[in-house]
Amino acid sequence: MDKGYPSLRMETMNRFLISEPLPRRVVHVGNVVIGGNAAPVVQSMTNTDTHNVKATLTQIIRTASAGAAIMRVAVPNKEAVKALPEIIAGSPVPIVADIHFDYRLAISAIEAGAHKIRINPGNIGSKARISAVVRAASDYGIPIRVGVNAGSLERKLLQKYGRPTAKALVESALQNTATLEDMGFNDIVISIKGSDVPMTVRACFMMAEKSSYPQHIGITEAGTLMTGAIRSSVGVAILLAHGVGDTIRVSLAADPVDEVKVACRILQTLGIKKNSPTVIACPTCGRTNIDVITLADAVENALEGRSEPLTVAVMGCAVNGPGEAREADIGVAGGKGEGLLFRRGNVVRKVDEKDIITALLELFDLVADELRCERAE
Image 1: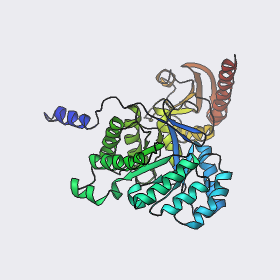
Image 2 (image 1 turned 30 degrees about the vertical axis):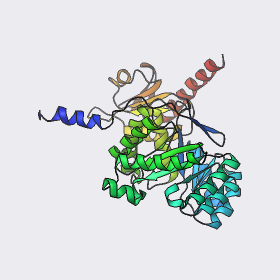
Image 3 (image 1 turned 180 degrees about the vertical axis):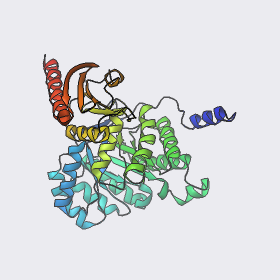
Image 4 (image 1 turned 90 degrees about the vertical axis):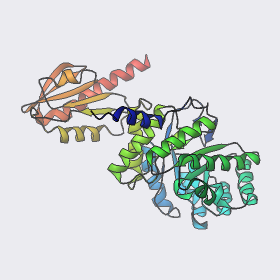
């Protein structure tokens, strides 16, 4: 073994080690509570033209149905502001208005009913302009998300650090929040992001040690569906596992619904979200006698949208499948032309291969009904 490996591993671990994060303040985004002891919630952002109310609302409703608790919309111009009241009225979840540069758009978005605004005080302009936005947010009782990205750091910080670094991101965020605090405003959410996963993780940890404001976390510009899902999962999971992160977004070059699905799976995998089924499946091998891949995909699709926290196993081998998935609530192990349905490792029924999905879903419904009855007692 490479003698340098243990020291390299320790060096990598030390990049992420932090002390206990500070207790987080409570912030309300519409009817959604973030910070304090609240569990992290999923957020996404529309990619429609905001002034197209029908398209924007359709996407918001689809994304909320997939599990988004908060949605953000871009507000780049007056036409987008004019669309906000109708969007907010038709949305099933709170709406965050994303503003850059023009402080007047921020004020107008607040007046239009936005439940939170996202700004970078550094690109809003003078203190007088920032103060005007703060007064509007105070008057309407909504929070401000201070967003700092590696790609939009202030020039003086880039000159100081030479490039975007974790310390530079944190320093920018602290300076920007201090500006709001000096104006008597403390209803703040912080977001510091970059596309570099280790740097972003370290920056968020540093912020958690220095500030009690809730954090919105994610890896910005993470990439396409598969690559972005992996990079986001690595960064977000490290943070959440250490108690850092109150709202999360998985930023993908994909449908916002896919962003939400990945984010919900991260929460589910960490045991934070327990209101949906989990499908596990064996990786297949030479003993496999059924099409596990197709079957697992079909089962996962069939259970999408269900709220019962049951684990469903799809195993390819009838010999030891039930034993390997003994902790699953229910499952199927494939044999030659047939499947063995099992519950907690005990075989309960044998079915023909063509009937596996139907029979497995029937067993799921049976166990789900029993679970509901237990909860009602």
